[in-house]
Image (cartoon, rainbow, N blue to C red):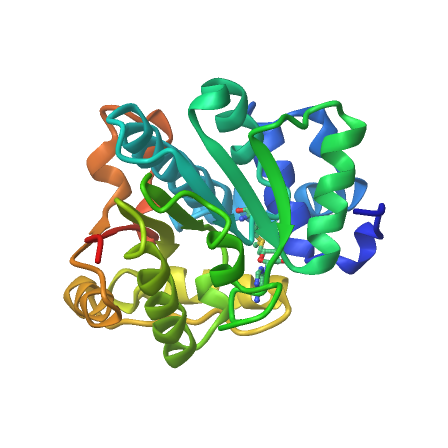
Length: 283
Ligand SMILES: C[S@@+](CC[C@H](N)C(=O)[O-])C[C@H]1O[C@@H](n2cnc3c(N)ncnc32)[C@H](O)[C@@H]1O
């Protein structure tokens, strides 16, 4: 893939990429000037939110990232999963970290819209971080068919092994019908594999009430340049939507319940987010 222009990629991907770097989760090869500018611009509002006892963006980003890592790690360690497609990977270091740690035990594909995918590919190459089991692909999470569809990418993987699909920082950009169609698409692809696992962050209405959280959500919407969608009224409705999409086991994990294993899940306000952990049965 040719090198591409970092200005064309999502500002939030630059921001979250810098959060991972600032907290020792990433590699300097993924540092961007845009990300640092956003990160330092948001430092003061984040400190104010913390003083007021409200959620901070950084706290729940770290909680969701660590919790997704933990679930993926467990699924790989148990032998359930050996192939991963991370959709909307942005500047996340997860693909590099898991591919480095598990080497030829896994195949890790990170995928994003065209400009981001080209940029990530160029960063991996420039940093000497690419490896045979780690690939970057162009995807449109909303495409049913075609070269940039999940179906096309998954068709090149081994159906006799387990596949995990990850989305982080993606679903809250889409309205509920779009998310439901996307989940059905994911469940359909995963059910063609021996084991199927879907991991994602999700913000539901019941955990995002109250003036502090509402102010925070409107700040977040301004930052991402569009509405942040809160899809389901409560955990039960979200789990029912996962079942309707075709998952046989879909649960929403609460970050604070993982505080023993994950120090980043001990911070106040982390429960504004949930982590979807959903499985399919092989058909
Ligand atoms: C907030 S960033 C999250 C990046 C990364 N997952 C992280 O947590 O650091 C959102 C990402 O979604 C990607 N994205 C937006 N719409 C998409 C779509 N239809 N298909 C695939 N990726 C998409 C953007 O390019 C961007 O990289």
